[in-house]
Length: 132
Image 1 (spheres, rainbow, N blue to C red):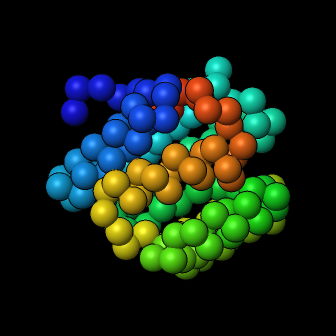
Image 2 (cartoon, helix red, strand yellow):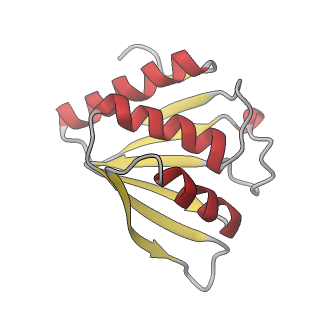
């Protein structure tokens, strides 16, 4: 891979799919996608949204409202399911682990829709693949 960020839907989908394929081909521990802080208008807190892929698991942190939207989104991805929800007492929100047994393109589509629908980002947000 030679590029690590994208700011349009088509570019992000390609970036996410390429990164997921590279992550799987390398058998790396984790692939991380971060939202550029300048693109985060979600009012979700001090840390912009991020999503990690670890093998066949997607990991993301959600507020209660975001978790509800995540569950709605999963209704459109029947091959994905929530495997674990952790809500530590010292943290606000929930860490969700979603099993994603699908190809890199389907994983990319889910990541894109999660950023747009779960985290309510606008269509021109910039995302960075910060680990593969």
